[in-house]
Length: 242
Length: 108
Image (cartoon, rainbow over all chains, first blue to last red; front, side, top):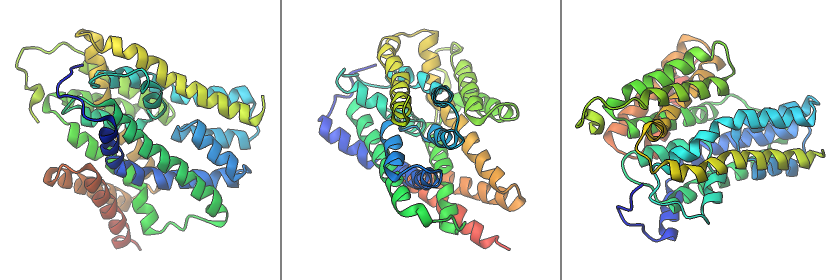
């Protein structure tokens, strides 16, 4: 962590983060809308659907949670499934801390609460080129959170009789998150880092043959980071070559 | 445990999974050793793994050559836009637009 460049006003940095969350908002809103619809169709009230998004804020595990509750699974089974799915987030905090200028204690809980896959990926892509301001990260996570909760509320409130007609706009929205991840990869790309990308992508792809997606992703992510943790061979390596 | 009890416990558990390592991470981040390099590579690795996961989800929704063409063209549009302008949001929306339009153009 470095103190260069100097921290700007926290409010200004948070505003920039909020503005830069727009691509996340575009990706989150339709998925959150779907979550709201599915939660209500599974027998939850709109308030319960919104309550899950407000309190848990963890995309895929929320869908699993609702499905298991609707199927009548036991409380501890549901709870352990949600926490197991979110275990990959254990690694996000320390990795993000390597890119932060500083981490004020009062901002840490807000930063941690919003540390979803997409917020983490966006912040790390940005952090590849310059140290991150913590308030910027909080602004980014706030935009994502508002879209997630707002999308859930819309889906739960308006979506009871709504059925996915498979329209092209809905299909285009399906591609928003993959497109966002690709754009982030392009932004964070360094030629010397290709083995990290190849290992993570390859292990995830092969892992999906045997494991559920979230497990394959965790194993792939760790494999890529392990490859990236090898000591650089020489000073002045092409690490910084875009 | 009541319904709200499960939701609160899931929210609290998820929060702690994110919060506690973040606090210890500030200490780890100061190092220069293996762990620091591991954590530094984790972001790029997570992005690569998320691409594979999200793209394969889309592929399995309609495993057909048309779906493959849409994915390739959508991805190409994102990368091209990202090369032309460093605006992640614009590249994302153009890629999604190309994916949607290609679906319309290739429809039976």
